[in-house]
Image (cartoon, rainbow, N blue to C red; front, side):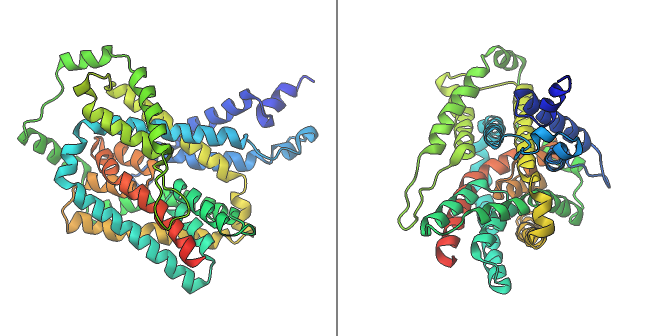
Length: 419
């Protein structure tokens, strides 16, 4: 009886157990993410891998600790809790990003938005071509390949759209295999996207300090100055919770509106990430003109962004960890992981190199464009942390809406055309 509280904390379904797991995963992941290997650290992304490890070994706790009464535990953390926290964390993250880039978004978009979106479209197109090519070369069923594609470019809405399209084709179709393939490819998809950003930096010998100096010089040449004290004081006095939650409310509504396209069985939506991002950009750009309190302090936005991405990554890791090792060892998942790495790296390295070397896009914007073209928040978090400025966020937000639309559409079309 005296040990029951330990049992509840370790493997129970109590609120205390859930909070304990999240706190441990995030704290350890953030700490380990600061460690540099060959001068590079993964930052917040390490939370994902700690989550996978904790979930995997957590499922073994009942046996390891001889807790006979809880050997029927099916999940280390309630899946419904994980689903909610994952989506809420993602909403907080993208909303903070949108508010930060909103004030200068449209000006930047006019200068290079078309170029960035064309580059992002090229990345989407290449990934689809590689996916279809692998399907014909290996004879792996297209539903599995679409799951691998969605995981390789870390696009959950595309996964959901593919599952719905596949399930609606026939009552006998099992859409679960798409999710399994997605889970196998996702972790290394995150690493692959960040690795491609690092690879371009190494290939072209990009010096972050020099890039920042160029950015500062360009800002001075354009007559940009730091925000004055009066404006800062005004921002601090505004009720910051109002723009956050009103914006999230409007964003969720916008993201839930279905857009019906002829020939596509499922409506396309911006989703719980795309909707809040678009609303946050609009509020950041035009909120001041209508006297709506949309500005929040830089420290508040940073905290919102970091908390959101940590919750999101912890959930993804905890979800994948329960079956990750088993699927790799016994389910053929190792091949799926390898194919996912190809789908991740090849388009990003080709287009990213062209963007920097041929089209002369600055490295910080390239980082954001690559993260946005794969709709990958962890890669954006890494990019912003590495750059030390918001240029990656602007690149990310510039290509995100169109990319999200294309990822959802192509996932469904692949199922409809080849399954």
